[in-house]
Length: 459
Image (cartoon, helix red, strand yellow):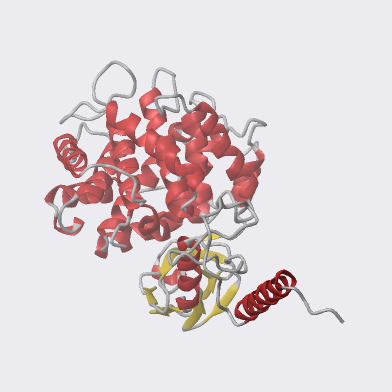
């Protein structure tokens, strides 16, 4: 064999070195080391970018999708939510308390949020209260002001499905309105809504939720861009009644469907006020007591529902009511005495029994008395009952006996309500008409358990 030449020997040696280098590089990669980089290459979608140390890391699994901080916080909050407790005290004998569809006696565990407590006696609704329960908290409701029995002379409450409400809702027009001769449909529809709310009905709960929903839809259809509901000669008066209905719709349900509508209605009502004097019924004329009282009620309801009525506007309302409240003047009609006395109760800085003007109004109403005969005025009966209930004391007990005889025992008769041939006994009843008369008498029977819910009154 011929000996290998120098050139061939060098080639073999160089090849061995290159092979060894490749094997060493492979070994280093397998062990996690990286070869020294050459000139930097432009990254491509499939090529991992260089790290600050200059190494090209191997691809890593994709990071999990970022979680919205608000969602995380909400989940944590839900984990921290604990049931609350509603407890009742002072429950009179015979009153059955219910929260939602669950009956209970002393206390009940509920999830946090807003709930509605009802109390019934002999299938008649005697109390309905909204209650807010915090996580892990306790809400205590004192029901001692609910009449212990009918023998106390207290209004007996309205049935859960009252024949009057059955009849009233049957009178509803296809557009959701209620009509009474001589009155704007906005006014009458607002009045009927108040009686339905007082019986515990809302747009999404109760036996009459469809009529409530349709009536509210009618009012919304009549509200203009400025927030006003009415446009007739007494449009401010009619708008004030509808505003109270809309603020109450929001106050008892908390539904966003009504919040903006109610606030715009309140704002429109404020723009019609004559500062320091009151409200006219329409665009002209003098200050109207009835419109002023309805506006005062709407403002009080709005404040209680946490809508915007400034402290300055509310103070001015109280001052103008006092200027108008000449309740001892015999020339002021009993109806206006009752309305002004109740407005004084709503705006009084102290307790109503201590207000001399309230006391004067109460004495005047007790002197006028209340009967179901030719002198009966259903609107007077309603506002006098509102005022005397708020005043309380012996005067309320005396008045309640009159209400039971004149309203509950007489106008509470289902036959009298539904019989089209029944005689309407007084000029005031004939002027109001059958539909409005039975709306007023229903409101009378609802007075003593709806005041706190609508106006935040002490009773």
